[in-house]
Image 1: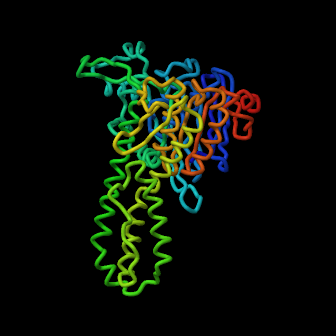
Image 2 (image 1 turned 135 degrees about the vertical axis):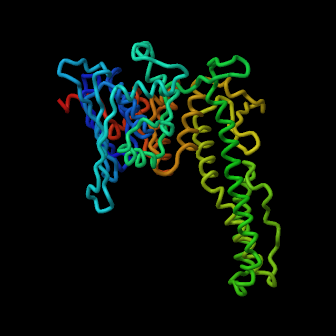
Image 3 (image 1 turned 45 degrees about the vertical axis):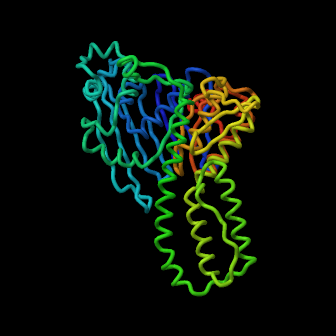
Length: 430
């Protein structure tokens, strides 16, 4: 998790110190347009993703990020001369200092390295189909180009001294959800050749959920094989178990209830509790129930996420619509006549809602740092007012850190304790 971040001379105008509260795990950046809310999200995202080229083109003087383990990264820009333009990356070198703190809270090592404008040029060339000169780069949106094409794993130009920092950063899972999230551009080689076309993110969710079910199904099969292969061995080892008919029925009923919920989602449909109690076989029956319980435990986290997702979506949307999740279809939306509504035909607000909650619930795990830009986009005021409480519950349930940039008072919903107003922060810094 990130403890705090300090940015000096952003765009040559703004300096901020932002402290992320550990207690709530949620921070909302507010403030006027142009004060750098989205840029701060991008700074965090690009640091965590080891997109170090980003700091060659960003206008700033110094950035410091401190993590909860007190490891820190300091990024500074040095001009070639005092007369250089701060917006001209060709005359600047970016210096990185990584301070690694060991378990005894003392600095064990410092690693320093630099990236020049030549590094940026080489990176653009490497990620381009054709050769690019510096003059050609001037007509190129470098950030957009490298966001699409850069791969940290393929970057052979990074210096050896950067490995300690990038290795540390790679241990963090992070997610950046942009403000424009309904559509994305994709290459359609089959129909259009190498042409970019717009696709709908909400359609991708169907395949993502199917893939998620398949991953858990593989884990479940392996768990079944492991438990079943040791059943006889466990049976011979446990010659006496305290089990009576009452306790058996209590355990069996609990498992049946769990299976009933799971089967609604197409989970573990092959499992059934269909044996009545027999005193002569109580050891085998107990191990049988224990085996089923252990097998079902594989699906517990997935089930919790599905329940939370469906509940939070159903509490807001959909106008005479119901959301359904299952292993076969992934995600479906049915109207009150049981007609399936194509996901891309949903309103922009409904699509945004599904995309946001899917990302926060299914694409995160403990320790994930999420940067989310303008969560209120296309949302009805009533939805906005309940979203922040949902997001706090998600952060608490799954142990993630959420950093939002928002213009909406309705989204904040009087929860100003978790807000950082960049306008006020700028005045305080001055």
